Length: 122
Image: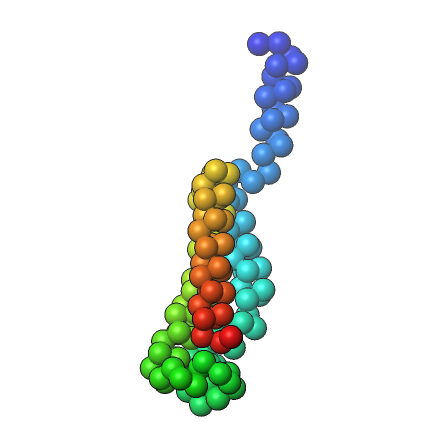
C-alpha cells in the first residue's frame, strides 16, 4: 500500500468522530427532546390528573365522560413520556435508513395526537 493510501485510510478513520459514541448522542438528543416537550408533558399530566380541567374545554368535551377525558390525556402523557426515550434509542442504534423510518413513525404519532385533539377539543 502506498503512503497516499495509508494516509487516506488514517484520514477516514479520523473523520469518524462518532465512532463508539452513539449512546452519548442518543442521550443528548433524548435530553433535547425532553426539554422541548416539557411544557406539553406537564400540561397533559395536569389535564389527566385533574378531571375538573374538562370545563376549560368548552364544546365537545362537555359531552365526553370523565373517564374518556382522563384516558385521552393519559394516552397523550404516555406518548410524550415515551418520545424522548424512543428518539434517543433511535439515534443511538439505527442507521440512516432506519432513522427515516423511525422519524415517519414519530410523525404518525404526532399526527394521531393532533387528530385526536381535533376530535375532542374542536
